[in-house]
Image (cartoon, rainbow, N blue to C red; front, side):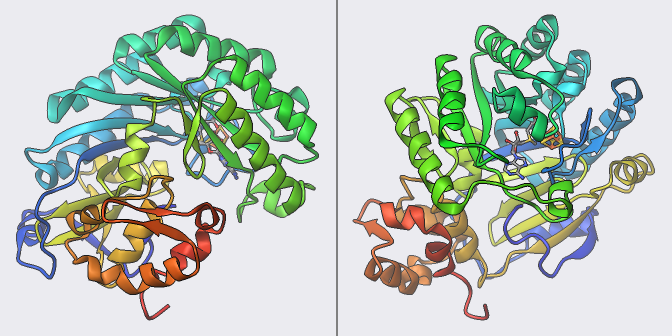
Length: 412
Ligand SMILES: C[S@@+](CC[C@H](N)C(=O)[O-])C[C@H]1O[C@@H](n2cnc3c(N)ncnc32)[C@H](O)[C@@H]1O
Ligand code: SF4
């Protein structure tokens, strides 16, 4: 969930009048605009997993409205272009859903359309999320040829018992084959793993991690399974490990990844040196992103304001609207009062924290806006700071919600 979305939103069309509005004087003063990323949401999966609350919908491969969706994406991109005029895109992320459900030719056409409209940095990181259930050797290679530089493989577990309990469409053998191919075909890759699974023991997790690390991934994202509202698991809750076991699991993960040369650099992200995910780092460093695709979010900065947008969530409605020429987005301007919390919510997820000047650069506010929160956090031992850096302490990282809440706007 993107912080701040859902607060005081009003529908707004991307009309020329609005574009002028973004450039008008406002209460903020941003000296420079942050790096810009592009997020492309592809909202379909072979089967909906019982724990998942992402904007993903079941769809058979042969039923994918491929060209219609691509046309809708391009219409939305075109409509958003005036908001990012002249800016370079530093990373692209195809997320889902299951982007690897789309044929490589479609990803190739899509990237071609993006390249024709946007200026990409020469070293632009281009990630695609892949489900091992869609794995075929030639298919993965073709994604690489289409320009994908980084594959993010949704493994979750290498144990067939847990894959089954998670309702995954793939088994251990497919997961291993997909990861081995990702290692061969792409510049770099990521594994998504989940822990604290129904019935999982420390020994089970230890085996899962050993299998994952034996595949020498440059990057792993490891998520504590959460029971999200409106999912199958929320309705029929499975028995999951208790909090003490889950903490012990996280310690085991940090130990094992550390020994394998991967450093925990964000709450859920572990990387070898030089292999951090640029796209996600840009979110956590409060950079800008344009989201296209059903339900995607954007955060865009202008000289005097920061704006958030959300697009139609329902894929059918999203396509209908785009093809009828209505490229609408729900939109809000982030208030001065909310900006400090929004910045801190992201920046404190990073083990290295942030440079104090980055706060002013990204929010257009003076560092005094967070002085009281910083003093309180320091008094409670939740941050460490010097002139160059403000970072969560070990304790602050363990009690991140408590730390972040010190920066809530006064009304909360
Ligand atoms: C959009 S999915 C990634 C790609 C693909 N859809 C897949 O599942 O293989 C992003 C990741 O979020 C994680 N995730 C999804 N729901 C979760 C939940 N309820 N708790 C923890 N992690 C979750 C999973 O690790 C998943 O791979
Ligand atoms: S495959 Fe991924 S996006 Fe699709 S339902 Fe499962 S976890 Fe969610």
